[in-house]
Image (cartoon, rainbow, N blue to C red):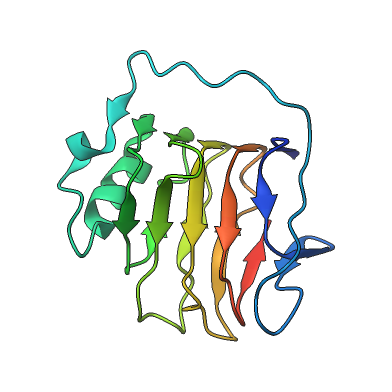
Length: 171
């Protein structure tokens, strides 16, 4: 597996083997920058997330699942998206999502504490400029974000995983 974490990507967790876990009870974690700084991706021909369904609602889950299962790249605007439901990709092709660093936030509002929030299984994963905010809503026995072993090429640039209290992030 190739795991690339851009220089400005932040994993707000302590690295313990293949699992990422909060480094303290408050969930503030430790910011760990990785890698060299590549150029920003070209967005030519990339569809806006709104073309996969309505966004900016109290529940953008269906739109995000349509995008993840389409295998097509998506451009995410610099807003906060509310995704209370579980997200799963199609386990085939490539997942590519391009946000606005520091402004594109995918937030999990209250609820679903006992289940995994996001499962990514595609062979290739490229996420740029997206903040994944678990909002402290991951239960002690659940995973926040799971990147499955089927993902062989992983590229996370200028991304952050925040507020994963009690749960886990895993590769």
